Length: 117
Image (cartoon, rainbow, N blue to C red; front, side):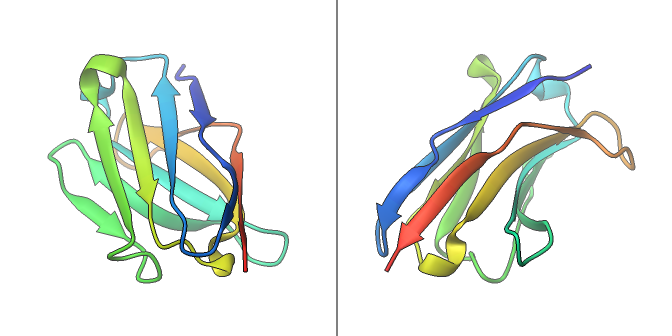
């Protein structure tokens, strides 16, 4: 079982920045991949950023150049640095961890990010 706890969400003006954190209850060096997803009432959950065990990253086109995923193995934590935030980035952001390829993974409870125009 993997437990994940996000933090760092909040209210920010357009153009502002936030950094989300996801702390895992396990050694993240052993994870297959870790990522960030977001959803709203009007949009289904979408992948925002993924970081694999090998260090490869994948970003949604809408956030490329603005969001950066990174990790700190010593803290069992990964981050999502978000800059130049836009109102359309408003969503509940959740982190996900997978221990093996193909599994559904483990999810955090989500943190709200609201970007005002």
